[in-house]
Length: 275
Image (cartoon, rainbow, N blue to C red; front, side, top):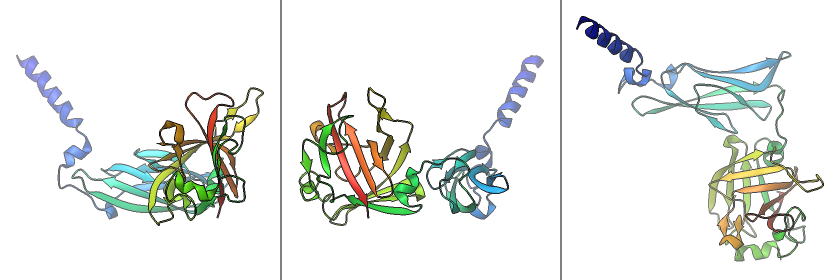
């Protein structure tokens, strides 16, 4: 009996010792932003402040770090910044009582020591950038051959005809790509705006049978599409993933293949220019 009592006592002690710190603090034990013990420490390479930063939260709160082009909820993490100069890292902590506190840390990036996809700069100019339909081209939207065409080739629409497909997303509409938060805001011609996020995966290339690169990566959006981001043959379903055919500081051409499409099957094309 004494042995059983002893074992139960030990188990009870271990259970208490393993309680999460948030539970031990209990309701009402919230800390303030001034009490946060957080750091953002850059990795130094050859004496220069690189674009990799080590984030560390030693406070009794749950973590959310917004480092400009992404968010991590890890207590400690290493993240990649994509622009030189001053970068804001916004920490939001969740207290045990449910209250939130926030604090901004600033780091100065001396050089992009670690590789950054240049597409971030092309799309945002290091801050934010507007994109509109490229009316200098014969067509700005329509369909053509998957892995064959590089612009609308079969059914071709000019900017003036876009409103017939997506009201308010033709003449006078624009998209704003922002580096902070990797945000994409679609602004319709009537002033209505929809905001979401975007991301790149430049490893997802599309090549033809002979190895020629047709698409150099993918652009993915969340909660918002690009202008007229629909697939007509799928009941105008919203499109959130696009093959990147062309993207530089001036032009952007995107494509979306219909499900199951092979070479020269139907794909949809978007043709934009920077404003």
